[in-house]
Image 1 (tube, rainbow, N blue to C red):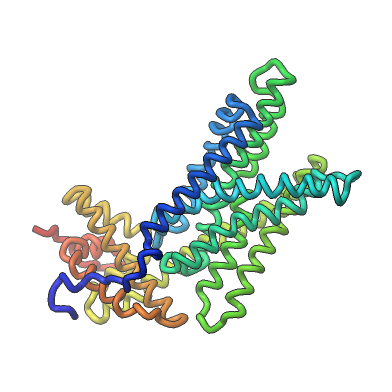
Image 2: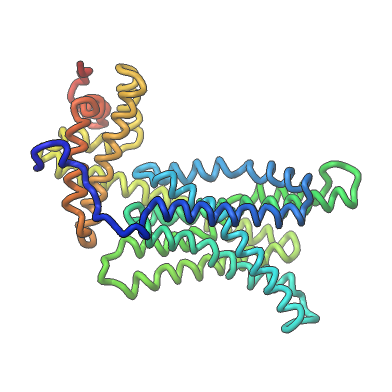
Amino acid sequence: MPAGQAQWHYTPRRAPWWHSRALRAVAIAILLALCGLTIIAIVREQTGTEGFLIGLLLSTLPVPLLIAAFRWVDSVEPAPWRNVAFAFAWGACAATLVAVIANTFTAEWLATSVIADGDVDTLGATVVAPVVEELAKAAAVLLLFLHRRRFFSGVVDGIVTAGVTATGFAFTENILYLGTAYAGDQLYASDEFAATTAQTFVVRIVMSPFAHPLFTAMTGIGFGVAAALAAHRRALRALLPAVGLLTSMVLHALWNGSASTDGLHFLLVYALFMLPVLGTLIWLAVWYRGRDLRTVRDTLHTYAAQGWLAPAEPWTLGSMYARAQARRLARRAHGPIAARTVSEYHAAATSLALLRARAERTAPPPDFAAREQELLNHLLALRPQASPPTQQASPRPQPLPYRPWR
Protein backbone atom coordinates (compact mmCIF):
# COMPACT_ATOMS: atom_id res chain seq x y z
CA MET A 1 0.00 0.00 0.00
CA PRO A 2 1.23 3.58 -0.60
CA ALA A 3 2.73 5.33 2.37
CA GLY A 4 0.54 8.45 2.31
CA GLN A 5 -2.85 9.63 1.09
CA ALA A 6 -1.21 11.83 -1.54
CA GLN A 7 -0.27 8.65 -3.42
CA TRP A 8 -3.70 7.02 -3.17
CA HIS A 9 -5.41 8.70 -6.10
CA TYR A 10 -5.40 6.76 -9.34
CA THR A 11 -4.38 8.95 -12.29
CA PRO A 12 -4.67 7.47 -15.79
CA ARG A 13 -1.89 7.97 -18.31
CA ARG A 14 -1.99 11.49 -19.77
CA ALA A 15 -3.22 11.65 -23.33
CA PRO A 16 -2.12 14.18 -26.00
CA TRP A 17 -3.90 17.52 -25.92
CA TRP A 18 -6.00 16.66 -28.96
CA HIS A 19 -7.40 13.74 -26.94
CA SER A 20 -8.32 16.06 -24.07
CA ARG A 21 -11.64 15.16 -22.46
CA ALA A 22 -12.45 18.83 -21.93
CA LEU A 23 -11.79 19.61 -25.59
CA ARG A 24 -13.97 16.68 -26.66
CA ALA A 25 -16.75 17.76 -24.32
CA VAL A 26 -16.75 21.31 -25.68
CA ALA A 27 -16.74 20.11 -29.29
CA ILE A 28 -19.61 17.68 -28.64
CA ALA A 29 -21.61 20.34 -26.80
CA ILE A 30 -21.20 22.78 -29.70
CA LEU A 31 -22.17 20.11 -32.24
CA LEU A 32 -25.28 19.10 -30.29
CA ALA A 33 -26.26 22.73 -29.74
CA LEU A 34 -26.05 23.42 -33.48
CA CYS A 35 -28.11 20.31 -34.21
CA GLY A 36 -30.64 21.39 -31.59
CA LEU A 37 -31.02 24.89 -33.03
CA THR A 38 -31.40 23.46 -36.53
CA ILE A 39 -34.05 20.91 -35.56
CA ILE A 40 -35.95 23.56 -33.59
CA ALA A 41 -36.02 25.78 -36.68
CA ILE A 42 -37.21 22.90 -38.87
CA VAL A 43 -39.95 21.82 -36.47
CA ARG A 44 -41.13 25.38 -35.87
CA GLU A 45 -41.33 25.99 -39.60
CA GLN A 46 -43.57 22.94 -40.02
CA THR A 47 -45.78 23.49 -36.99
CA GLY A 48 -45.82 27.24 -36.48
CA THR A 49 -44.92 28.95 -33.21
CA GLU A 50 -48.14 28.07 -31.40
CA GLY A 51 -48.08 24.48 -32.61
CA PHE A 52 -44.44 24.17 -31.56
CA LEU A 53 -45.19 25.39 -28.03
CA ILE A 54 -48.22 23.10 -27.66
CA GLY A 55 -46.19 20.15 -28.97
CA LEU A 56 -43.31 21.00 -26.62
CA LEU A 57 -45.61 21.13 -23.61
CA LEU A 58 -47.37 17.85 -24.35
CA SER A 59 -44.20 16.01 -25.37
CA THR A 60 -42.49 16.86 -22.09
CA LEU A 61 -45.06 14.94 -20.00
CA PRO A 62 -43.65 11.37 -20.36
CA VAL A 63 -39.96 12.35 -20.32
CA PRO A 64 -39.44 12.60 -16.51
CA LEU A 65 -41.19 9.28 -15.96
CA LEU A 66 -39.08 7.47 -18.56
CA ILE A 67 -35.80 9.00 -17.33
CA ALA A 68 -36.70 8.11 -13.73
CA ALA A 69 -37.46 4.52 -14.77
CA PHE A 70 -34.13 4.14 -16.54
CA ARG A 71 -32.25 5.70 -13.63
CA TRP A 72 -33.96 3.23 -11.27
CA VAL A 73 -32.83 0.32 -13.44
CA ASP A 74 -29.31 1.77 -13.37
CA SER A 75 -29.32 2.56 -9.64
CA VAL A 76 -26.93 -0.22 -8.57
CA GLU A 77 -23.98 1.50 -10.26
CA PRO A 78 -25.47 4.59 -11.92
CA ALA A 79 -23.78 6.07 -14.95
CA PRO A 80 -22.57 9.68 -14.62
CA TRP A 81 -25.15 12.31 -15.40
CA ARG A 82 -23.00 13.63 -18.26
CA ASN A 83 -23.42 10.28 -20.02
CA VAL A 84 -27.19 10.43 -19.54
CA ALA A 85 -27.29 14.05 -20.73
CA PHE A 86 -25.23 13.20 -23.82
CA ALA A 87 -27.48 10.26 -24.71
CA PHE A 88 -30.67 12.32 -24.35
CA ALA A 89 -29.24 15.30 -26.24
CA TRP A 90 -27.99 13.07 -29.04
CA GLY A 91 -31.41 11.51 -29.45
CA ALA A 92 -33.28 14.82 -29.20
CA CYS A 93 -30.96 16.85 -31.44
CA ALA A 94 -28.49 14.94 -33.62
CA ALA A 95 -30.48 11.76 -34.28
CA THR A 96 -33.71 13.60 -35.08
CA LEU A 97 -31.92 16.00 -37.41
CA VAL A 98 -30.32 13.12 -39.30
CA ALA A 99 -33.66 11.30 -39.44
CA VAL A 100 -35.61 14.33 -40.71
CA ILE A 101 -33.08 15.11 -43.44
CA ALA A 102 -32.56 11.50 -44.52
CA ASN A 103 -36.26 10.63 -44.48
CA THR A 104 -37.13 13.73 -46.50
CA PHE A 105 -34.54 13.14 -49.21
CA THR A 106 -35.29 9.43 -49.38
CA ALA A 107 -39.03 10.06 -49.75
CA GLU A 108 -38.40 12.54 -52.58
CA TRP A 109 -36.09 10.08 -54.31
CA LEU A 110 -38.62 7.26 -54.01
CA ALA A 111 -41.43 9.47 -55.32
CA THR A 112 -39.49 10.67 -58.36
CA SER A 113 -37.29 7.71 -59.30
CA VAL A 114 -38.61 4.44 -57.91
CA ILE A 115 -42.35 4.31 -57.26
CA ALA A 116 -43.84 7.42 -58.73
CA ASP A 117 -47.33 5.90 -58.67
CA GLY A 118 -46.99 4.01 -55.38
CA ASP A 119 -47.68 4.77 -51.76
CA VAL A 120 -44.47 6.56 -50.81
CA ASP A 121 -45.62 7.44 -47.29
CA THR A 122 -46.31 3.81 -46.33
CA LEU A 123 -43.03 2.59 -47.81
CA GLY A 124 -41.12 5.37 -46.09
CA ALA A 125 -42.73 4.66 -42.72
CA THR A 126 -42.25 0.88 -42.81
CA VAL A 127 -38.88 0.56 -44.57
CA VAL A 128 -36.92 3.80 -44.69
CA ALA A 129 -37.74 5.38 -41.33
CA PRO A 130 -36.91 2.31 -39.17
CA VAL A 131 -33.50 1.91 -40.81
CA VAL A 132 -32.56 5.60 -40.72
CA GLU A 133 -33.86 6.33 -37.23
CA GLU A 134 -32.44 3.25 -35.55
CA LEU A 135 -29.04 3.85 -37.13
CA ALA A 136 -29.09 7.46 -35.93
CA LYS A 137 -29.99 6.45 -32.38
CA ALA A 138 -27.51 3.57 -32.34
CA ALA A 139 -24.69 6.03 -33.01
CA ALA A 140 -24.96 7.36 -29.44
CA VAL A 141 -24.80 3.84 -28.01
CA LEU A 142 -21.75 3.10 -30.17
CA LEU A 143 -19.96 6.29 -29.10
CA LEU A 144 -20.46 5.61 -25.39
CA PHE A 145 -19.52 1.95 -25.90
CA LEU A 146 -16.22 2.95 -27.53
CA HIS A 147 -15.25 6.04 -25.52
CA ARG A 148 -16.86 5.49 -22.10
CA ARG A 149 -16.20 1.77 -21.63
CA ARG A 150 -15.56 2.25 -17.93
CA PHE A 151 -19.28 3.02 -17.56
CA PHE A 152 -20.55 0.60 -20.22
CA SER A 153 -20.00 -2.94 -19.06
CA GLY A 154 -23.22 -4.94 -19.33
CA VAL A 155 -26.82 -5.32 -20.43
CA VAL A 156 -28.20 -2.80 -17.94
CA ASP A 157 -25.85 -0.12 -19.25
CA GLY A 158 -26.89 -0.94 -22.80
CA ILE A 159 -30.61 -0.79 -22.05
CA VAL A 160 -30.30 2.47 -20.14
CA THR A 161 -28.09 4.19 -22.72
CA ALA A 162 -30.29 3.12 -25.63
CA GLY A 163 -33.50 3.91 -23.75
CA VAL A 164 -32.43 7.43 -22.77
CA THR A 165 -31.26 8.13 -26.33
CA ALA A 166 -34.59 6.94 -27.72
CA THR A 167 -36.47 8.99 -25.11
CA GLY A 168 -34.76 12.10 -26.43
CA PHE A 169 -35.57 11.12 -30.01
CA ALA A 170 -39.24 10.48 -29.18
CA PHE A 171 -39.41 13.81 -27.35
CA THR A 172 -38.48 15.81 -30.45
CA GLU A 173 -40.50 13.61 -32.79
CA ASN A 174 -43.58 14.04 -30.60
CA ILE A 175 -43.19 17.83 -30.77
CA LEU A 176 -43.29 17.56 -34.56
CA TYR A 177 -46.29 15.24 -34.69
CA LEU A 178 -48.33 17.00 -32.01
CA GLY A 179 -47.48 20.46 -33.32
CA THR A 180 -48.44 19.48 -36.86
CA ALA A 181 -51.71 17.95 -35.65
CA TYR A 182 -52.52 21.08 -33.65
CA ALA A 183 -51.72 23.34 -36.62
CA GLY A 184 -54.01 21.24 -38.83
CA ASP A 185 -56.81 21.38 -36.29
CA GLN A 186 -56.51 25.14 -36.04
CA LEU A 187 -56.67 25.42 -39.80
CA TYR A 188 -59.76 23.26 -40.31
CA ALA A 189 -61.63 23.50 -37.01
CA SER A 190 -62.71 26.25 -34.67
CA ASP A 191 -62.21 24.53 -31.32
CA GLU A 192 -58.84 24.79 -29.64
CA PHE A 193 -58.05 21.09 -29.26
CA ALA A 194 -59.75 19.12 -32.03
CA ALA A 195 -59.81 15.45 -32.88
CA THR A 196 -56.41 15.08 -34.57
CA THR A 197 -54.46 16.59 -31.68
CA ALA A 198 -56.32 14.50 -29.12
CA GLN A 199 -55.88 11.32 -31.13
CA THR A 200 -52.16 11.96 -31.63
CA PHE A 201 -51.75 12.69 -27.92
CA VAL A 202 -53.50 9.46 -26.88
CA VAL A 203 -51.55 7.27 -29.32
CA ARG A 204 -48.08 8.75 -28.84
CA ILE A 205 -48.09 10.05 -25.24
CA VAL A 206 -50.63 7.87 -23.40
CA MET A 207 -50.49 4.52 -25.19
CA SER A 208 -46.95 4.29 -26.55
CA PRO A 209 -44.41 6.58 -24.86
CA PHE A 210 -42.27 3.43 -24.58
CA ALA A 211 -42.21 2.67 -28.32
CA HIS A 212 -38.89 4.24 -29.33
CA PRO A 213 -37.11 3.17 -26.10
CA LEU A 214 -38.37 -0.38 -26.68
CA PHE A 215 -37.04 -0.51 -30.24
CA THR A 216 -33.61 0.95 -29.45
CA ALA A 217 -33.24 -1.14 -26.29
CA MET A 218 -32.66 -4.12 -28.60
CA THR A 219 -29.56 -2.36 -29.89
CA GLY A 220 -28.51 -1.60 -26.33
CA ILE A 221 -28.87 -5.25 -25.33
CA GLY A 222 -26.63 -6.27 -28.22
CA PHE A 223 -23.93 -3.81 -27.15
CA GLY A 224 -24.38 -4.74 -23.48
CA VAL A 225 -23.88 -8.47 -24.07
CA ALA A 226 -20.86 -7.67 -26.27
CA ALA A 227 -19.37 -5.52 -23.51
CA ALA A 228 -19.62 -8.40 -21.03
CA LEU A 229 -17.80 -10.86 -23.30
CA ALA A 230 -14.10 -11.59 -23.14
CA ALA A 231 -11.90 -9.46 -25.39
CA HIS A 232 -10.70 -12.42 -27.49
CA ARG A 233 -14.25 -13.19 -28.72
CA ARG A 234 -14.03 -10.49 -31.35
CA ALA A 235 -16.35 -12.00 -33.93
CA LEU A 236 -19.19 -12.41 -31.45
CA ARG A 237 -18.62 -8.96 -29.98
CA ALA A 238 -18.98 -7.48 -33.47
CA LEU A 239 -21.98 -9.63 -34.41
CA LEU A 240 -24.18 -9.07 -31.35
CA PRO A 241 -24.61 -5.27 -31.76
CA ALA A 242 -25.52 -5.83 -35.41
CA VAL A 243 -28.14 -8.41 -34.43
CA GLY A 244 -29.55 -6.04 -31.82
CA LEU A 245 -29.70 -3.21 -34.35
CA LEU A 246 -31.46 -5.42 -36.90
CA THR A 247 -33.99 -6.49 -34.25
CA SER A 248 -34.73 -2.88 -33.39
CA MET A 249 -35.34 -2.09 -37.07
CA VAL A 250 -37.73 -5.05 -37.42
CA LEU A 251 -39.74 -4.01 -34.34
CA HIS A 252 -39.83 -0.42 -35.54
CA ALA A 253 -41.01 -1.48 -39.01
CA LEU A 254 -43.71 -3.70 -37.54
CA TRP A 255 -44.96 -0.87 -35.35
CA ASN A 256 -45.00 1.70 -38.16
CA GLY A 257 -46.64 -0.79 -40.51
CA SER A 258 -49.45 -1.48 -38.06
CA ALA A 259 -49.95 2.26 -37.49
CA SER A 260 -50.32 2.75 -41.26
CA THR A 261 -53.27 0.33 -41.46
CA ASP A 262 -56.71 0.28 -39.88
CA GLY A 263 -57.15 0.82 -36.16
CA LEU A 264 -58.03 -2.79 -35.38
CA HIS A 265 -54.76 -4.09 -36.84
CA PHE A 266 -52.82 -1.53 -34.83
CA LEU A 267 -54.58 -2.52 -31.60
CA LEU A 268 -53.91 -6.21 -32.24
CA VAL A 269 -50.18 -5.59 -32.78
CA TYR A 270 -50.14 -3.32 -29.74
CA ALA A 271 -51.88 -5.76 -27.39
CA LEU A 272 -50.62 -9.12 -28.66
CA PHE A 273 -47.04 -8.27 -29.59
CA MET A 274 -45.70 -4.91 -28.36
CA LEU A 275 -46.98 -5.16 -24.78
CA PRO A 276 -45.57 -8.70 -24.30
CA VAL A 277 -42.21 -7.56 -25.73
CA LEU A 278 -42.27 -4.58 -23.38
CA GLY A 279 -43.06 -6.84 -20.43
CA THR A 280 -40.17 -9.13 -21.37
CA LEU A 281 -37.80 -6.17 -21.58
CA ILE A 282 -38.90 -4.91 -18.15
CA TRP A 283 -38.42 -8.37 -16.67
CA LEU A 284 -34.96 -8.63 -18.24
CA ALA A 285 -33.87 -5.24 -16.92
CA VAL A 286 -35.10 -6.00 -13.40
CA TRP A 287 -33.47 -9.45 -13.48
CA TYR A 288 -30.10 -8.02 -14.53
CA ARG A 289 -30.42 -5.34 -11.84
CA GLY A 290 -30.98 -8.06 -9.24
CA ARG A 291 -28.08 -10.07 -10.62
CA ASP A 292 -25.77 -7.07 -10.25
CA LEU A 293 -26.84 -6.74 -6.61
CA ARG A 294 -26.11 -10.42 -6.00
CA THR A 295 -22.72 -10.00 -7.68
CA VAL A 296 -21.92 -7.06 -5.41
CA ARG A 297 -22.88 -9.05 -2.31
CA ASP A 298 -20.98 -12.21 -3.25
CA THR A 299 -17.83 -10.40 -4.39
CA LEU A 300 -17.68 -8.19 -1.30
CA HIS A 301 -17.81 -11.25 0.95
CA THR A 302 -14.29 -11.97 -0.32
CA TYR A 303 -13.10 -8.51 0.70
CA ALA A 304 -14.88 -8.87 4.05
CA ALA A 305 -13.04 -12.14 4.68
CA GLN A 306 -9.78 -10.22 4.21
CA GLY A 307 -10.82 -7.49 6.64
CA TRP A 308 -11.60 -4.68 4.23
CA LEU A 309 -15.28 -4.71 5.22
CA ALA A 310 -17.27 -5.87 8.22
CA PRO A 311 -19.02 -9.24 7.75
CA ALA A 312 -22.48 -7.63 7.79
CA GLU A 313 -21.73 -4.99 5.17
CA PRO A 314 -21.92 -7.12 1.98
CA TRP A 315 -25.51 -7.99 2.88
CA THR A 316 -26.41 -4.32 3.12
CA LEU A 317 -24.67 -3.48 -0.14
CA GLY A 318 -26.53 -6.30 -1.88
CA SER A 319 -29.91 -4.70 -1.15
CA MET A 320 -31.07 -1.28 -2.36
CA TYR A 321 -33.58 -1.14 0.50
CA ALA A 322 -30.84 -1.80 3.08
CA ARG A 323 -28.66 0.88 1.48
CA ALA A 324 -31.49 3.39 1.80
CA GLN A 325 -31.97 2.34 5.41
CA ALA A 326 -28.28 2.96 6.12
CA ARG A 327 -28.53 6.45 4.63
CA ARG A 328 -31.61 7.14 6.77
CA LEU A 329 -29.76 6.04 9.91
CA ALA A 330 -26.82 8.32 9.11
CA ARG A 331 -29.10 11.25 8.24
CA ARG A 332 -31.09 10.81 11.44
CA ALA A 333 -27.92 10.81 13.56
CA HIS A 334 -25.75 13.41 11.80
CA GLY A 335 -27.67 15.08 9.00
CA PRO A 336 -27.45 15.11 5.19
CA ILE A 337 -23.64 15.27 5.05
CA ALA A 338 -23.42 11.94 6.84
CA ALA A 339 -25.97 10.45 4.45
CA ARG A 340 -23.87 11.61 1.48
CA THR A 341 -20.80 10.04 3.06
CA VAL A 342 -22.62 6.71 3.37
CA SER A 343 -23.82 7.00 -0.23
CA GLU A 344 -20.26 7.65 -1.41
CA TYR A 345 -19.04 4.67 0.59
CA HIS A 346 -21.66 2.42 -1.00
CA ALA A 347 -20.81 3.68 -4.48
CA ALA A 348 -17.10 2.94 -3.98
CA ALA A 349 -17.84 -0.55 -2.64
CA THR A 350 -20.17 -1.27 -5.56
CA SER A 351 -17.61 -0.11 -8.11
CA LEU A 352 -14.97 -2.24 -6.41
CA ALA A 353 -17.15 -5.36 -6.47
CA LEU A 354 -18.24 -4.99 -10.09
CA LEU A 355 -14.69 -4.14 -11.19
CA ARG A 356 -13.37 -7.40 -9.71
CA ALA A 357 -16.32 -9.44 -10.96
CA ARG A 358 -15.77 -8.21 -14.53
CA ALA A 359 -12.06 -8.87 -14.29
CA GLU A 360 -12.72 -12.45 -13.14
CA ARG A 361 -15.38 -13.00 -15.81
CA THR A 362 -13.35 -11.73 -18.78
CA ALA A 363 -9.85 -10.37 -18.21
CA PRO A 364 -8.57 -7.59 -15.95
CA PRO A 365 -7.90 -4.27 -17.70
CA PRO A 366 -4.32 -2.97 -17.67
CA ASP A 367 -5.12 -0.46 -14.92
CA PHE A 368 -7.07 -2.94 -12.77
CA ALA A 369 -4.59 -2.96 -9.87
CA ALA A 370 -4.40 0.83 -9.70
CA ARG A 371 -8.18 1.25 -9.83
CA GLU A 372 -8.73 -1.44 -7.21
CA GLN A 373 -6.16 0.19 -4.93
CA GLU A 374 -7.80 3.59 -5.28
CA LEU A 375 -11.23 2.20 -4.43
CA LEU A 376 -9.91 0.26 -1.43
CA ASN A 377 -8.19 3.32 -0.03
CA HIS A 378 -11.34 5.35 -0.63
CA LEU A 379 -13.26 2.80 1.44
CA LEU A 380 -10.69 3.01 4.21
CA ALA A 381 -10.98 6.80 4.31
CA LEU A 382 -14.79 6.70 4.60
CA ARG A 383 -15.10 3.60 6.77
CA PRO A 384 -15.06 5.21 10.24
CA GLN A 385 -18.13 7.30 9.37
CA ALA A 386 -19.98 5.06 6.90
CA SER A 387 -19.42 1.54 8.17
CA PRO A 388 -21.48 1.72 11.42
CA PRO A 389 -24.82 2.64 9.76
CA THR A 390 -24.08 0.21 6.94
CA GLN A 391 -23.67 -2.63 9.44
CA GLN A 392 -26.74 -1.59 11.39
CA ALA A 393 -28.89 -1.70 8.24
CA SER A 394 -27.80 -5.23 7.35
CA PRO A 395 -30.77 -7.53 6.58
CA ARG A 396 -28.86 -10.43 8.15
CA PRO A 397 -29.67 -11.26 11.80
CA GLN A 398 -27.45 -9.99 14.59
CA PRO A 399 -25.84 -7.01 12.86
CA LEU A 400 -23.30 -5.05 14.79
CA PRO A 401 -24.79 -2.27 16.96
CA TYR A 402 -24.73 1.18 15.47
CA ARG A 403 -22.56 3.48 17.55
CA PRO A 404 -22.50 7.03 16.09
CA TRP A 405 -18.98 8.32 15.54
CA ARG A 406 -17.71 11.21 17.56
